Length: 165
Image (tube, rainbow, N blue to C red):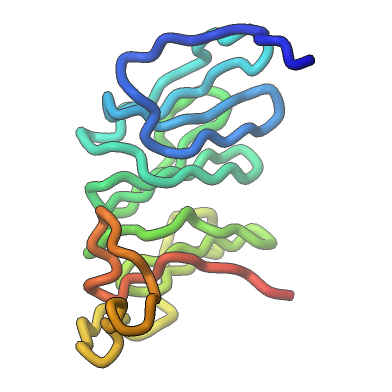
């Protein structure tokens, strides 16, 4: 039998899928904050203001919580304090959570971005992928990507980055 340990009333509905790491649950809420909640007690540990835009994606790696918002910004947040370590403003929607492998951070907007120093500097490692090429936008014929609220399917924006060994 499943037992309910606690419940938590937030200021608005949850917008991003929650992520659990250690004893913390991270979730983005429509009130435009990212929350860290203690998994055992339901107590709020910290909240982070995402500059007036809903949290779209969350990824945890080491001492960082990465999240992107609908305002095209990727944030690195200290997992213990909730303080912003850095932020990066892209020119296009960030369509997927960042991927991290061997301390290298990757994320996609209209480019694939790479940081080897935990976000202090970024290198673009792809051409501009927002071609808006009608030959690539045939969802109605191919059954490909369904329409989503980001508009990514209309601009050939990267939706997923997977690191393969």
